[in-house]
Amino acid sequence: MIKISSLARCLLLCTFLLFSASLLIMRTSAFLEPISVGADPSKDSPASIDILQVYLTNNGTHFQFMIKCRSAPTPNPATIYRVFLDTKEDGATSGTYIGADYCLEAKDDTYLYEWDGNAWTQKSPIKIQIDHDDKKIFLTAKLDDIGYPGYVENSIGIVVETIQPLSNQRDRAPDDGNYAVIHEVIPELPWPTPLVFIPAVGATIYVLYSRGFRKK
Image (cartoon, rainbow, N blue to C red):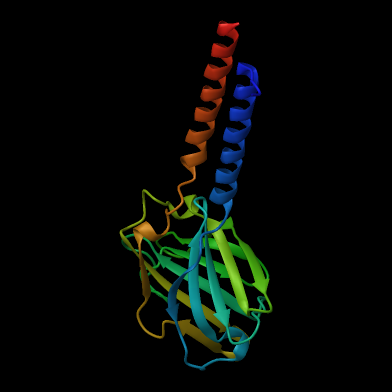
């Protein structure tokens, strides 16, 4: 029977724990399976701005909206994609979604806007991606930038708008009112988890290593 020294056992355990920690970090940084926010099946706009479906996901630090259109989205100064969020009381007093507090906008530049009581002001840049095959545009912003979780109500209102200002063409999803998701949908994968797990791994390694030396 092969005997394994205390140090070897410690190293094997350390390797396993570090491997487990790396898997957790990878899982935490990955986006969750998207949920469907709502559909807009009516064909009432040019294909590239005709909204078919809206999805939402997050990875614990960022949230991401996916807008599926009838043809591949083409954000540019003449074709704009917006997601409005109503996360708290008050909000916009005019425009597409009265009561909205934030707006993710993709055109030639991409920003998260915040309603300051009088107008929309730039808050922070956001990321966009285009999936030409699946005809989707992805808009990604930080959860911190919308005050999540402390400043977000239990129910979050959502309205998606696509617009071509020069031709006065637009689509709105839903056509009337707003979609809604509950507060708990976003934080399914809390980022602090690895910040707790990794120090615990380090402490375990230290204790085992110290005990190994004391036994010698």
